[in-house]
Image (cartoon, rainbow, N blue to C red; front, top):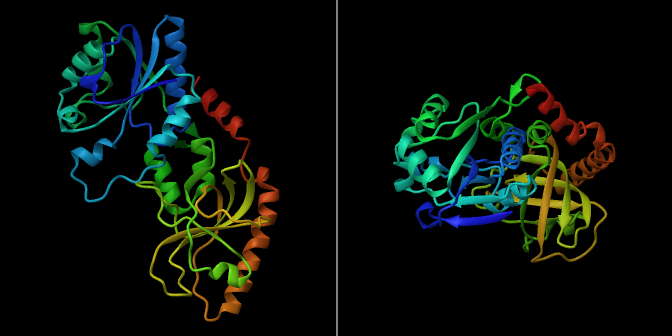
Amino acid sequence: MDIFRGSWSAFSDLRDSAVTVGSFDGVHVGHREVIARLVKTAREHDLRSVVITFETHPRDVMDSVDYPVPLLTTTEEKLDLLAETGVDLTMVLQFDHSLGELAPRDFVQVVLAGRIGMKKIVIGFNHAFGKGRQGDRESLIALSREIGFTVEVVNPTRIGDIIISSTKLRRMVIEGDLIGAAKGLNRYYTLSGTVIHGFGRGKRLGYPTANLGLIQSNKLPPKDGIYAGFGLLENGESYPAAISIGYNPTFGEGKHSLEAHLIGFDGDIYDQKLRLNFVQRIRGEEKYDAESELIQAIRKDIETISKLLKSRHHLLPDLNAVADSTKSKQE
């Protein structure tokens, strides 16, 4: 997959492209269905498949929000996931007011058809574009007849009765429903960071933890609590993990932290990258009156998590089967 990052106005003209446009936060099963259709259409018509996405979420620029939209994927994670789809080119555009203020017609005619040589576009059922999201699929179809390209609309992807969307998946993560989020993402939800020196309390209590400090910029953290998951080290080794997100109320720090006890690991990983895959929320945070009570709770959590992860194939349906089932519901 080729990658372009920058302003659309700086991009050299393309010709004969099949295009899809969106934030694609999470690159969830619905996004993957749209992109699969894009790649298929492009290959059938000898076109270059192009995904257009954005460095900054459009709402951060156009809605004057106090806080950035919390995301399911960083840009780098999104690019890694898009590379799995077989798309030829991903354009990560700088979303600024000049782009956000383009009228729907100008966005299609100047950017998509003019700069990128769009011959076909594949969109989701609720696609909106242009200034104020004024453009919709009906207006896009009308423009296609005038400018000369074709439009393919992909039906919503459902798991059970739920239409999968980035907004709904963010809500699941916020509420601690990591099993539901994994089904919609077709993978476990992850947070990554560099292991830093903490207070050393975990080691003193007999359960050393890897402290990731600040969570990735704009990355959405799950609801505070204790989670079962896996820790993936830089060398590729994976360990079951008891993950804690919260404020350590027993010690009254008042500082939000993310840390994990890697079950069965005994080594030094300071300053190394660690990725945490979240499987299931075990419980919420609790404050204990004595360290002995905390140690007992940690021991119980680790026992619960170890048993749960040994039978994790019972927690989630096979994730490939999830993808197959959602696809079949659209056909």
